[in-house]
Image (cartoon, rainbow, N blue to C red; front, side):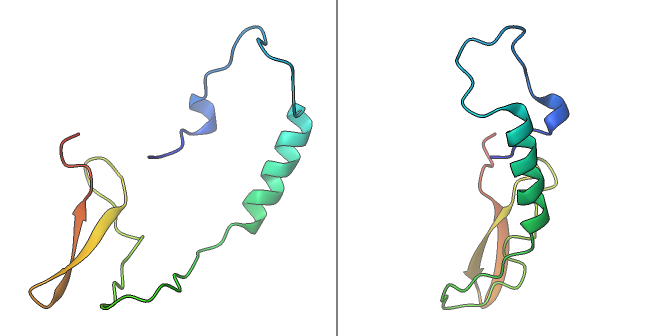
Length: 83
């Protein structure tokens, strides 16, 4: 799954629920969150190293590719070929 870009979000013309977090607080928290984003290094133990794990994306659907070890080499494939 991917998050939609903010310019593609759908907003209601009238609020249907009571506001829990104000728009100003949301945007301030979002700004802090974006500043803290940095590449994460996996610390999981695996039998085989996957050098490109989490970095390779499908050319058709832009989703992250799944890594698997086959015939002594790392291979990467799209998890959602049916879509």
